[in-house]
Image (cartoon, rainbow, N blue to C red):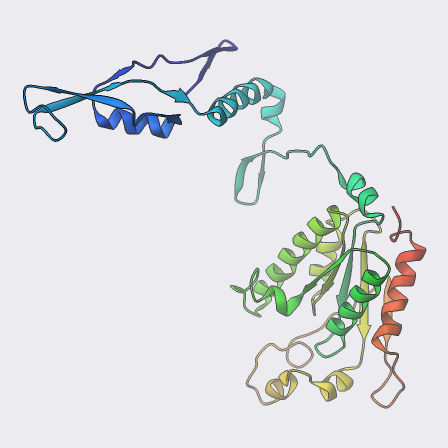
Amino acid sequence: MVAVQGGAQVRPSISTTLPDVESVSSLKRLGFVNVSRFDSVVRGGGGGGGGGGSGSVRLRSFQPIKAMEDSTASVVNDSAAISCKSIRQMSTMGKSTNIMWHKSSVDKLDREQLLQQKGCIIWITGLSGSGKSTLACSLSRGLHSRGKLAYILDGDNCRHGLNRNLSFKAEDRAENIRRIGEVAKLFADAGVICIASLISPYRKDRDACRSLLPEGDFVEVFMDVPLEVCEARDPKGLYKLARAGKIKGFTGIDDPYEPPLNCEIVLRQKGKNSTSPTPCDLAETVISYLDEKGYLQA
């Protein structure tokens, strides 16, 4: 260990003669190498490799690991850099206490210039069966063909891993949206066009995700497809199960969907017998919006 007293670095002295093997183990934990190169001095008889009696260990040589020295120096420098002002910047976020934001030397603008695009979130919301995932895939392919980096956060996919411990109760749905919003924010900060595709039925949860980003970086896309059309499609058979009472709290049946009030893009389908635009057509509508707003160039 290294202590700092009055701004000066004080290193404790370490004797080259250690009283027992436990001290050698301690040295190893401190990061010293070559501690296995020692002479056993047997006191009170029983000489040789496996003799009895109380033994002591005389360290022949040791050298501190270089990484340990660098790490120690870094700790000292960092400690000196933390002034009273810095300590006051420690914060509490939720259940996390004594945390501080560390700014990177490479920021969002640098990453956007590297990718030649602007990071943002395309948040696709709508009823189950409205075509959200299909649009997300077409949009991702369209952007990729233009040399733009995009990534999809699909609601079902995220529940396979990140959110697999969440149910479909209201409080878990809110947490599901919050987590995906935070991850999408990281993608946008990395300069990536993040496509979030999930029902996200509650307006307040979507608005909370919007508030995470600067003005204009959250593009809400509403798949405005009537319930009867979505139910007729029923790609996963969930509407049928919900109607039979086998699924409780299903959006559009016994749980509400709150459509956006001021979203950036609305993609409508009037009825099941009307001519519908293709997923590629819908994707082009979104891409045109991104191009117009300057997100496809740095």
